[in-house]
Every structure is written in structure tokens, then in C-alpha cells.
Amino acid sequence: MDKAKQRRPSGLGKLKAMISEKTDYYDYSLVAVIILLTCFGLIMLYSTSAYMAELDYNDDMFYFKKQAMISLACLVFALIISRIDYHILSYFTTVLYGAAILLMLLVKTPLGHTSHGARRWLKLGPLQFQPAEVAKIAVIVCLSYMIVKMGKQVRTLKACMVLASMGGLLGLIAYAATDNLSTAIIICGITAGLIFIAHPDTRPFVLITVVAAVLITIFVLFLSSTMETSSNFRIRRVLVWLHPEDYASGDGYQTLQALYAIGSGGFLGRGLGNSIQKLGSVPEAQNDMIFSIICEELGILGGVIVLLLFAYLLYRLFFIAQNAPDMFGSLMVSGIFIHIALQVIFNIAVVLNLMPNTGVTLPFISYGGTSVLFLMSEMGLALSVARRIKFHESELLL
Image (tube, rainbow, N blue to C red; front, side):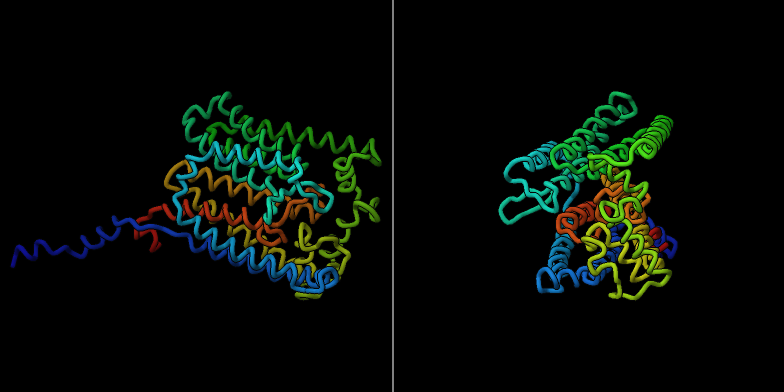
């Protein structure tokens, strides 16, 4: 009887056993915020595009139905990816990097497809997508793997130059082959961000940032003081950004109409579905300028709620990166964090005329099947990393 009592664990022993036991983790909060953003995006897409869809296709749900089907399929695809061990990507980094370059170069061949005046799409049978989106995933995965393989060597100048050239090459090809400067900037931003995270010394990055800011400021001041017009459309975009009212009937029309939409919405907005600017005043309102319609219909309050949803999404990615089981997973999720943050900042800054027009979509909300597919793929990778996080039971209870 005494021996049986000795074998029976005490209450303290049970507590210690429970605390020491580790359990798998799945970030349902990240899944929830992805679903919320997607559903909100579909509601706003229908509200924004119904009028023009009825005029162009005799179906007010044309854009909504396409986006809803793609979003549902991509969400399922992301959940499937989350069940796959992300370490398998380390065996295909060279293939992924080479495929990204090849697909972007194919845009210059007869397989390339032109839409809205830009040749950025690749048409392979029934499939049509922007190969530059593949480059974003490629730079995240490949640079993360290279940083891990370099180990302590990553702090050397040579290693940083190699990483910068790998990312810079993808950005250069994205610009040269698809004429997509915004994607090239995002790729370079992801590259710089990953090197910054991996490098122990922040001083060189601060110096580079200051120098770049000074050079950009000098360039903008030079343009504003010496040029009133230009045949180069990129310089013209900068001029339109500086003085949109001078180009109200031309290149500045979309920007001004978006600002009118935001201003007329006030704090609480006109009400869902009651936008006036979406009735043709804001061209392609369901794409890059959808945030302006959100602000017109739901007001500044609606815009702030959208920003809070993105802030929570980024917080979940930050949490996963901080607790990832290894450096490879942490760097990949950090790259995804940088990508989402840059796209949100660029899109909203353009709508508010805080920077020149870049043609960057608002993640999960703007219309576009390619964007949703690759964003969901990145979310699947983040969930795959999260799934391999192990916490003590006591930490989960807290």
C-alpha cells in the first residue's frame, strides 16, 4: 500500500508533467484574419465593381464571382501548403530561382500577354498570371536559405554583396522583362530587409538609408524646379504626384478623383454601396484604388479598421517569425512580413498621394487572381512554419 502511494504522482508532480509537456501549435488567429480580410475584400469588391461590371458584362457580379471562386480555391490551397513541411523548399531553391527568371523572360516572347497597356502577364494555355509574383516568393525562399547556409559569414561584406546581387538580379529582370518597377522595388526591399535582419551591425544600413533619402529628395527637388513636362512616363508620374491639379484632365485625373472620394466620405462615410466616385470617376476602382472607395463608403473609420486588420496580420507574422523552430523558417516569415508591409504601405500611400503611382494592389482586397494566389501561397508557408512551433502547455494557457 505504501509503495502504491509512492508511485502515485503528487499534485505538484502532475503540474510539472503538464508544464514540461510540449504541444504542437497552429496559428488559428492568422487563419481568422486572412479570412476576415478576404471576406471584407469580396464585399468591397462587389460594392466597387457592380456598376461597371453591369455596363461591361451585363452581370453586376462578374468580378465578384471570379474573385470569390479564386479566393476560396486559394484559401484551401494555403491550408494544404500549411500541412507540408516547409523544409522541403530547401531542396528546390535553385529550381525556384531559375524558374522565376525564366518565367519573367518568357513575357518578352509570344507567350507574353498585354493588358491595360502593360505587357506583364504570361499566358500558358488556360493559365494567365504575372511571373513577377513568382519572383517575390523566390527571393524570400532563396535568400533565407542562403543566409542560413552562410552562417556567421553573412556579416562579411562579400556575403552581403552576394545576397544583394541575387535579389537585385531578380528585381532587375522584373523591371527589364515585365516593365514592372513597383515589383522590382518590392523585391529589392525584401532583399534589403532580409540582409538587415541577418546582419548584426545596423550602422551601414542606417547610413545607406540616409544617403538614399537625400539622393531621392535632391532628385525630386530637381524635377519640380526644372521640369514642367516630360515624355518619360515615370518622370511624368513624379510630376503628377507633385502637382496633380496641373494634370487634372490627364495623368492626374485618377489621383484627384481618389482624393475626392476620400474627402467626401468624411468620418463615417456615405454608407456601403453609396459611393459616387465608383460610377466611372475613378478608373479601375476595383484594382489599385479600392481603398479610396472604402474610405468614401465607410469613412475614415472604415479605413482605420482595414489598417488595424493588416496590423494584426503583420503582428501574427511577427509572432511566428519570433518563435519559428529554426532560422530558415524565421527568415522566410520575416520576408513575407516585409512583402505584405511594403504592398500595404505603397498602395495606401499612392491613394493618399503621398508617393507617385506605382500600380501596387492592396493585399487580399484588390481584384486580381494572380495576387491572391501568391499571397495565399505565402500565408500557407507562414502557417507551415507556425505549425512546427512547439510551446509548453503553460505558455498556451497564458
